[in-house]
Length: 136
Image 1 (tube, helix red, strand yellow):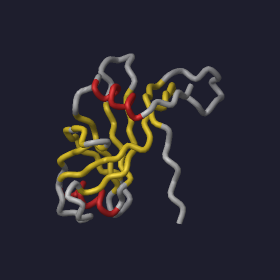
Image 2 (cartoon, one colour):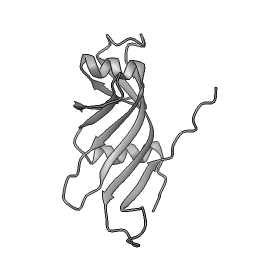
Image 3 (cartoon, one colour):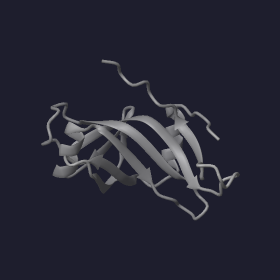
Image 4 (tube, rainbow, N blue to C red):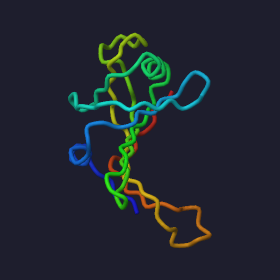
């Protein structure tokens, strides 16, 4: 089931969770890089202090994801995809504070598929509709 939710509802969903998450970026060799970061709103973007490797990954490959873990066994994980940029606007990997503009968010939990032969084996609820991809 999919239920689109506006950015204001993403704020509410984040307010119900701890102010930290796992930040996933992609390294030069295509491997995922996961770190735990504290987060705070900075306007309509989420701000995070990151290390050198995460800053470099985000500078060259700005598509990132945030994963907020379960709070209870029957809870949903909150997964937020976004576009990262250096907070100082330099575009360089030396900036250790990044801003993440959310582009898509879902609440996700494993659930038994209604049809065991179906490829769908989860129970997801979108919070922010995906942004159209830029053409060019």
